Image 1 (tube, each protein chain N blue to C red):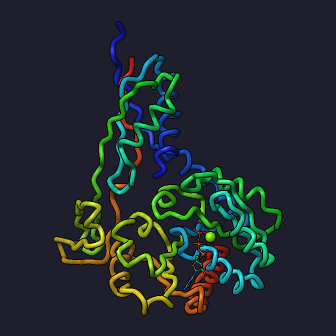
Image 2 (image 1 turned 90 degrees about the vertical axis):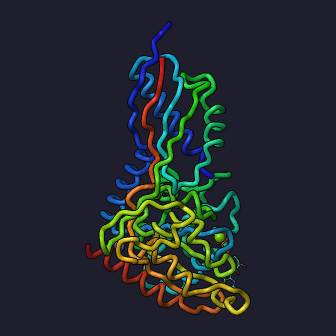
Image 3 (image 1 turned 60 degrees about the vertical axis):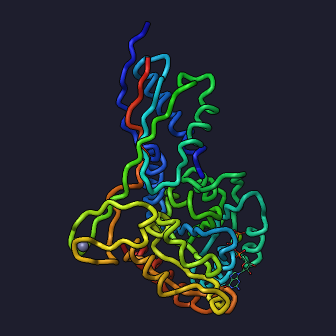
Length: 223
Length: 117
Ligand SMILES: Nc1nc2c(ncn2[C@@H]2O[C@H](COP(=O)(O)OP(=O)(O)OP(=O)(O)O)[C@@H](O)[C@H]2O)c(=O)[nH]1
Ligand SMILES: [Mg+2]
Ligand SMILES: [Zn+2]
């Protein structure tokens, strides 16, 4: 009979991914490419926001998009129609992107010397919150029909993002969404977050967001 | 929801430690997982049973210790332990502040130890 041994493992399960993320951030910094990780529930408006953002910024910056939508090329085709390169990752049924997958996407991009690369992460507010992608900036969309209680249900997502876009504000009159309460709930989890109220349908608020993004690119290149 | 990805990682790590310690069978693994993560214990064990077939970890029991969510009030520096459900409604018992908290713990994914023979 063998004796039972207690082995102290003391390892962080996400350590490999975190280390790879740090390495990727350094590499992208040296190339002055700002990587943005866009997260939201299915249908919140990720692709619509990308289209609006590209429309505003494509003359000022060299941009590309990495699409992680589950095995369909619908979104990638919409982006490609703007003339911006978009890479479709085959994520199968995967619920989030990790650094290894993001790197595959980056390798597939042909456009040289990019200023901004935006990842459309898998549509879900849970899993993408827990995995670092190597992005410099994490951004999330919450759309009005989803409700103002989402910070209570998905606190990690709200606490890790640098910016929150509250989309579909044109639908406010048809819902009981309380914008002031939402701000209060979000600030409690994340006092430093930038909140933009937008409508990808009417274009409301898009300029405030793209101005912030422009500033972020300038700050990133300077520092 | 991403129990599968997390479980693959756990298996990689414990198999490595089994090799380093020259053991043939892992009996149990103790994990420390933050309350803030949405990991379901039952699913982790399920996936682990599936992935660990024909490895030193086959049949291993996963013991999951949840680490509490602890916030620090950035106004008065007091730390507050809180349940996930109450996160959006935190009021600091020190200064009655409602806005400015940082997360001290509750997000961890950690393999503490394992029993093996
Ligand atoms: N009323 C309204 N509809 C919007 C707005 N933004 C997006 N939509 C609509 O919402 C639907 C989903 O938008 P998408 O941009 O495809 O959302 P997504 O998050 O990329 O969706 P998935 O990739 O499928 O998860 C589409 O029918 C859009 O036209 C908005 O501001 N107002
Ligand atoms: Mg989309
Ligand atoms: Zn306080």
